[in-house]
Length: 108
Image (cartoon, rainbow, N blue to C red):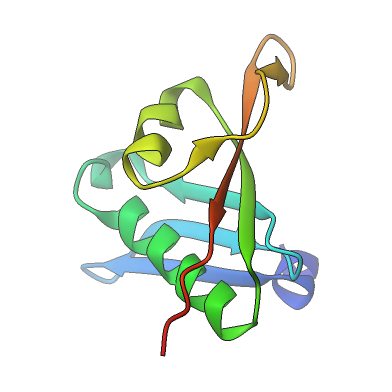
């Protein structure tokens, strides 16, 4: 984790003094992680984290973000302006990953 923090932008969401979620993005705009603790799901934590990644990307001059969504998170990303960039691909083990992208809106 220390290497990830040193090499990437890592954001942490805190709720009631506890970690509610963690997100990470590479310098090239590849979102590596957007994880929310199960007890904080559907409370806006993931939406806040992905929005902060978009702000970070804008401030770093990126034009596009990319990620591989799980089936579970697919609806979330689609409802937040992300689009499919290709067909589903084999993931880890029996999982499937869904390549997605989103244009970065310039934030003043």
